[in-house]
Amino acid sequence: MKHYILAILILGMAASAGAQRIIRDQSIVNQQERMVFKQWDRKKFTPTSGFLGLNPNYWLTWAWHPNYPKKDLRPLGPIGPQTQRLAFAAAMQNTENAYKLHADTLRNTAITEAVNYSAVFSTADPLWMLYYRHEFEPLLNEQDANLMSGIPAKEIDYLVRNGVYEWYREESSGIKERLDGAMTTTLDRGSRLLTYHRLLLEYRRLNTSWEAKKQYARKFLALSESTNKMKSRDQPIVERQGFRTDQQIADEILRKSKL
Image (cartoon, one colour):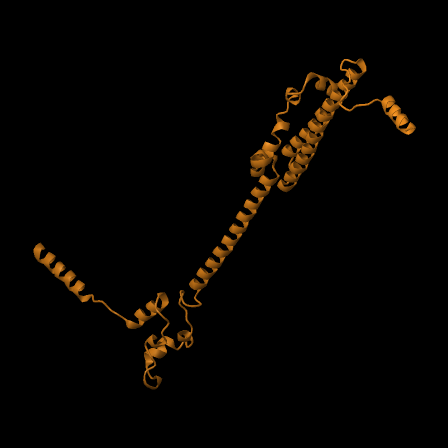
């Protein structure tokens, strides 16, 4: 008995399963397609009005929404909400990129200005490394022993006694102090380079004057030595050929006048 009941239940379930069939409503399919991805085709708004508008299904479906087929309601349509959202998102992305570019430009400009003004990078300046560092090297590494190297003791004594040596030391120390100030002060790069150039011109004029004073000292000492020798007769005057004294010239004039 149990087997009969089980067989009847299985047959009933199979019959009910076989009774289900796929229903394909083209109107629903058209609605799904035009709402998602396909074009808003007014010809596919089914059911249609039919001959002389006598199709009752048309009126049951579209009577309450007469303007529905005329409006493109697709989310991804030309003016759909999803299209507008994507357009707004793209516009916001462009605005964000523009703000980011502006911020990056400001950051790069700020970094460039900081490098230009900061004294930390003054020794790393290309123009300083390639030119001014070599020109100012004697001043930066200046020592007292190097100033008097190759100068005779008499000239050194003369330069020290007359204050020339002390004058040069003070002037060179002043230029060096101003150079250190230009290198360690927060200053615009252009102004810093102009300061380097002005100090370099002053340093060159100072060296020119220093060399000239050393030459003057050498000449003065040589003349003084010659004068002292003449006064002490250590070096007698040698008469050159054709040399005549004033008395000899006067006697010759008188002798010729008697003739």
